[in-house]
Length: 172
Image (cartoon, rainbow, N blue to C red):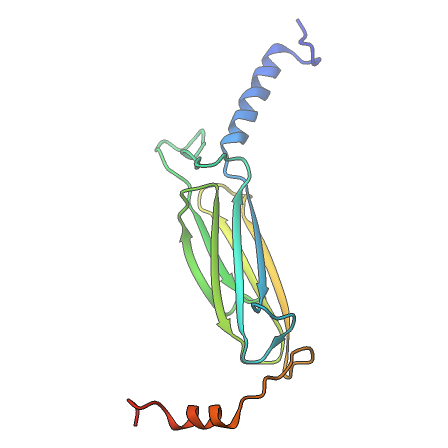
């Protein structure tokens, strides 16, 4: 007997089982941005803000992944995600951490003062300890210039500069 979709009933049961397994897997999407708050260009000495967001695509608000689905692993185990933020050559590490989520997304922000001119790249690698092939990579690249072209320079009054150089009453 054939089903409406053209397959055997046993084949349809297998498809339903496969779809339920896929629905329980932690499918994620990683995005990363880098910017200097309130500025259009990035200049040496600026504080660069990098924001990273991991969205769990198949979980509703408040849901999190269950136990690892494996036919041949005899123990109950929950999967874990590990985040590595590094440069393009994978030689300098900015962070390595285990991600703990209580929602269907994870956000991280880190700041770094820029000290050199040129292209700066960050690569985020999100790796799962239980599922092969679900790992994600995101890259962000910024160009740092030595002198600002678009910014207005703020002129301080001579009295303000003198007050800063003299120090406060407590310092004296």
